[in-house]
Length: 213
Image 1 (cartoon, rainbow, N blue to C red):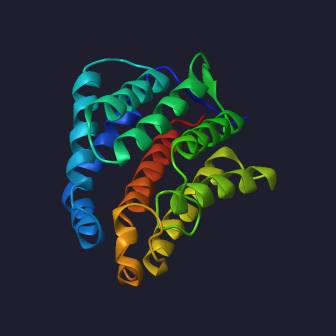
Image 2 (tube, rainbow, N blue to C red):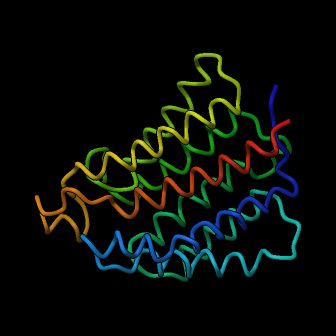
């Protein structure tokens, strides 16, 4: 059975922070078209603060995710801090004390993060939010494993579905948040949250995939 070690996998979160910081301007540019333009700045600030606390330390993936989630929940503003904060702390809780992470554990982690977000927000698939990325990604991962695919193949399926979900938001009218005030004028633009969620899911999956034995 394919697994990867929780121990010393905290570096995955450092890589994740690097990707978010790299995409700071891009995420804010997207957000500026239908939102208030601060998504990339806020995300880079939070992920950067978490990375500063994690660098030069050997941590488990669960510890690193908990650090990230706590920073996002308590120290950055905007609507996304609490949403992603809850997602990452729920991820961390499902991995806590698990030495070897397999596909079933990874699925439990994904579902816990999704349920955490849904517990504090009302968005559904089709509302032009990060849910349009996260839900199809989780479903694709579970579908792949149910069809006998290996852990790494399921991670690949997750990434493809996450990016397709992100791209689907271009053709949606925003139903939630500031962008919803624009109505039909929100068509034709990617959702910033869906875009950052695709980056997050891809980087987590690449980190896991590289460590699977």
